[in-house]
Image 1 (cartoon, rainbow, N blue to C red):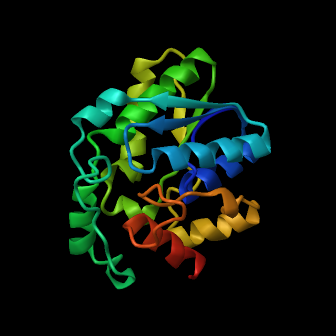
Image 2: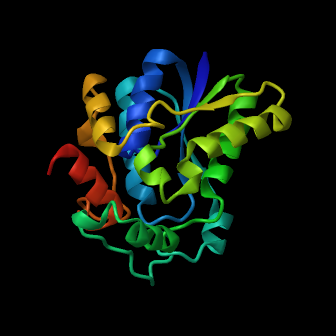
Length: 215
């Protein structure tokens, strides 16, 4: 089966990319720039990963989404939420954190954009990087979301590609273990909300990544 992969260069998307290499024929990986702080680092990471595996890569720029997004993930005048590692499983804290970095309909926009590529290139699968850990606070990471968007794609496309996620039911630690089995390029990943020379190790994305790898 041919696939389109949404590749941000982070842990989840990279491990799904590596699994898709074994399960499908990846015909294109897409990285989206919607004005997020880490856009350039995500693009660089995805480009390196795709180059290593000789996969076609394309950057999709969504300037309009950046313009209407006022949360801290995009608006650099706002401070990113920071959690202690001990707070990562506190739903009250993580729900507040999620609200502060929420981008309007982000995964809906990204998946439907990828579906256009999938229909045009005759790909039957759209591979995404979701996980059970963050689905608790980001409903667009959940199994219910995937089920419903797959249903909608049956009506909005002619070839009816389906969204696939190999890590949907896994937490971050389990995804790291799967990544090790797949020999995923951990040295090329970028799992940070910021875009500095190194991952900040302070944002929620970093905290979850470093907790999962045991640091």
